[in-house]
Length: 175
Image 1 (cartoon, rainbow, N blue to C red):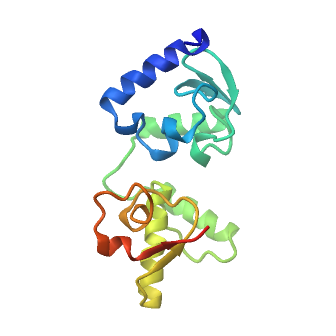
Image 2 (tube, rainbow, N blue to C red):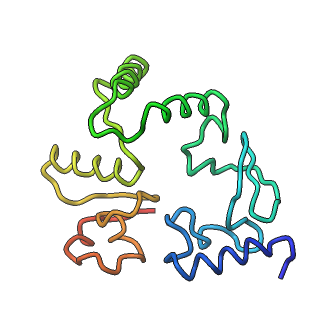
């Protein structure tokens, strides 16, 4: 074993005992990266760089699966997050910040009339599929690339076990 990756290998073995695929998302799965070259577990990050559990530094070109566009640990983002956490998080009703951010987005994006926030790309894509089906009255979806883990998409991939055949037939993939 490469001694530079001992901790990473240990964490991978440990994770595979208790987490299907060794990661909580397909995108972070060890199968998504070249083993022996790419790190398996990150311990910390700052700006555009991340350090694995063995202390090796990498340019993090994935940047939190696309969610970290300002870089890891941006001072302004950290301060705003700290200030909000002191006021509370995950309220049972809407917060004024939701309205303020939606208003800013509507102003900044000429074609946006309204804004709906979501927690991940799978949910957003599934909402778009549902909206397209409602608008067109059609059931079939044509797609390429990666679109998350919901049945309408996963049914058209090799990971389709557990997805009903009727659902599988509704999505057609093209290269």
